[in-house]
Length: 155
Image (cartoon, rainbow, N blue to C red; front, top):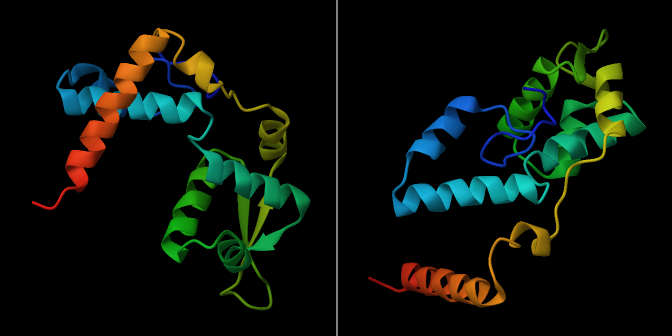
């Protein structure tokens, strides 16, 4: 499956096939809610927003991993994990600084630049919920609000 392909359950740009299989086979209410949330996030274009932001930043200039972390306001473990994912996809290179071996410089690869040239697949709210009538959308909204309210009530 190419990264831009759509999976059978409507998810874009996600390669976690095992996760998709688990979600497809869980027909409990919680499982269906997780599946809807997973698909919704990808349909709305948010699945890999931070990775895309990193590529956008590195397309402008090389940066140290520490500077990138500070600019994005995320923890060192999180930035390291994100960079590893991008590196494994061949989109980013890590280089140790010759003068200070503790410093890691990041740069975007040609494949990363090509990925940036592609437009992310983003669907509008109307498009995402078009399978439901206006009445069904109102019912869904009421039910979701009722669930959220009950989850926030003190026990």
